[in-house]
Length: 215
Image (cartoon, rainbow, N blue to C red):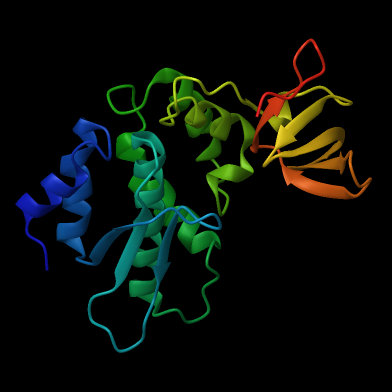
C-alpha cells in the first residue's frame, strides 16, 4: 500500500497542483489500490467491487489531461464509497447513490483555483445531474479537450462542430455528416455508402478549401 509521499509523487503533473492534497485525503479516508494504466478506448477509468477483498482497486488512463484526470479520479472514488457502503447490493452503477456521492466529493473542487473558467462553467452545470461519462455532455467535453496534449501540427475539429453535409476524414476514411442524434452523429462513408453512428466528440479532419482531407 502506498504512503502519502507516494501519492504526491504519482499525482504530480497528473492533476491540478492544488487538488493533490484533496485527492490524497480521499485515499486516506478510505484506502484503495490505485493504478495508472494504458489508454483504453472504452473507458477513462475503472472501479470494480470485488467481494472478499478488503482493499479495492481504481485505475485511470495515463493520457488524460489534468482536468479530465481529476474528474475521472473523483468519479471512480465515488463508486468506491458507494459500493463500500452498500456492498454492491441493490445499487445501480450510476444510480442516485453514486450521483449524490460524486456531487459531494466534487463540491470542494468546483472553484477557479482548481479548474479554468472555461471548464468550470460547464462542469458546474454537469454536476447538477452527472451522467455515467463526461462524454455525455458535449459542451463540457469540448472544453476539456482543449487541454489535451496534441502534436503542434494537429488541425482536427470535433465532429459535433461541423455543419450538416460537411465531409471529413476519420481513421483514413472519408465521411459526410448527415444528422445529429443526441450524443452521436449519423454519417455516411463516401467510398461504400454505408452509414455509421459516430460520437459527437470524435476528433476529425475537415476537408480543406480544395476538397482534400489532409491526413
